[in-house]
Length: 176
Image (cartoon, rainbow, N blue to C red; front, side, top):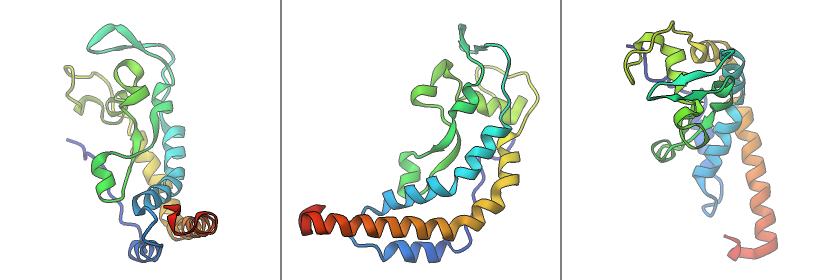
């Protein structure tokens, strides 16, 4: 069976964490980390979208064959998102979204079938070859993501400090 996901340890993550810990206590650390991961994962999301295959016709939704998945929904569903579990560790995910606008026949869940092919066992066995578009995107963009980590963190830190200063000047200590 294929791996469920890829975990990356960003070089300098301890330094980035120390930098973010220097922010005032009134600021929400989770929001700061979310901004950082969203900005830092942008090249990976773009790479995944460029590698994702596009089918030319509607594909039937397996549980209900009367519903169809439109072409291009897989690419639209790709992005950075967070869950309750990822928020606990100030993290996030990059991949096809399967909830909200992409649930049921909206095609987000279809990404696992494309990525892993016959290995996915859901609603019977999916018949198709694996096309690891996320793995290809990670292989091609991981160096950029890792190299930009500290630079992106400094940008987020500077913006956060500036925003905090403006808020304190405008509202004083009651600004939070």
